[in-house]
Length: 81
Length: 390
Image (cartoon, rainbow over all chains, first blue to last red; front, side, top):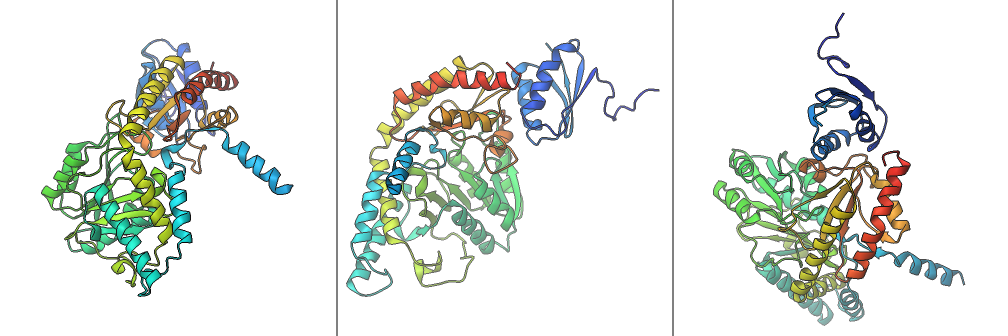
């Protein structure tokens, strides 16, 4: 049985649950984990710190990754390199 | 003995290199002297007809003339106020009152000072216009927003208080004028730092003495003649009902003494600060890996630099820099009173964690800047190591 597309965990290679963690910890978590998915793969980040939305977008820009969706508390990043 | 111990502790506290000028320059010695002189001169209530009252009234007239000259206004347009927050509230509330038949929309940029954003949200329906990656206003969106029906007023800063980026205030004022909308121009970060004698077609101008080395209790609201501004408080005898309550004459005298000093020395100080910030910007980018430099590198207020280091929290960074002898500000969440990161950095798409906001004082030296640059990379690396991000 497949997961519906809007549910957490749908269509992603890895889920990081950083709920309750303050920035920069969620960003550090995705930086450490992004290399473990193949290029083109998706990482889902669950984080409720208010700085996650701007900081994940800035991290993707600085690190050349793609922010696929940003809807707190659920974010999806695609590994480009 | 106890007093001496306290004084030596105060002396210790003052030793760090103070690079936190973004929210206010320390009181200038000339401003302190002017305050002491005015406070000791026996000036009385400027409302009174006796000699000491008349002397106080003359001092206030002189102060209004000097403020007016600095911002290209008429002396009778100058209202002596308190800090930025109450002045911004009076400007916005007074214009929404005067323009209530037109509408109640208040247009601002998304990177205004929180005092201005707070006033806009409190007294009208707030519409925030976005900025680009450098923090500069989207002029096309601004013109469209102020051109819609129902706009009571618009507010824009001359220079951003966190990242220094200069706004296109003349073009923004032209768009307001074309739409028949009064513009409140917040000159706080620019006053005494760029030439403010001709700032375009504003209707109300806001300034604050604490930003340039005057007393923190004094500000200005300059209301152009013909502006439909109505006092949003009960009228009294002071300042023709445009600002309530007695005026603190020695503080105002001190504020204009500081304004005279910074204006006289503006070009030399700004040129030196500009060089130091250029140097800092280059070297921070070169010496600290994964750093996000914010704001316009060229078209900016001379004394500000903001940057963010990836994988570092702003609170620890601020405290570690303080331990190393440097007082800096930060726009990161938890590093100030707010749980939310700086709205300015977020609106620009800049990194908000690991943020450092430097504001150089008039007396900041190259040696102090170089010491900061020597210390910063090690502090950042140590915190990254502690967080497991090295």
